Length: 146
Image 1 (cartoon, rainbow, N blue to C red):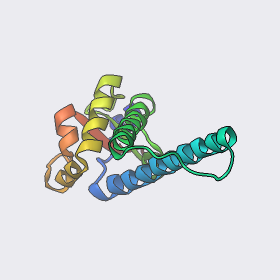
Image 2 (image 1 turned 45 degrees about the horizontal axis):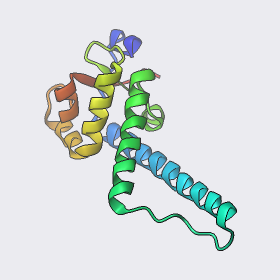
Image 3 (image 1 turned 120 degrees about the vertical axis):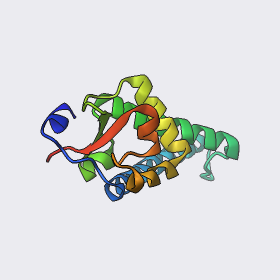
């Protein structure tokens, strides 16, 4: 992201961010379904037919899904600045100076993004094109210049 900021890369808009977010939701969902099917396979091997997916209480499923999504987003933003969706849409998350977010800030931004995704709707009204998450964590999303 440093190169993007130094080159004067444009701040990403709500559509690019929204599409990247939808791609990331699909990535998390595919991983969750894969894990559930894998658990069903383990159950099948352990107990025999018929194949069945383990039943997980809704509250536990929600908590695990939230935690996984936060780790996925936060880990990607802290290490490369891009999730799968961000890479596809050519956007990079970093601090306002264009450097990578630290792990704590990336995880906080991820937790805010997963808990309150409608914060993205602030982008069109912000002079800096910042979401509410960006304002709270002092982050920015720019096009990667490719």
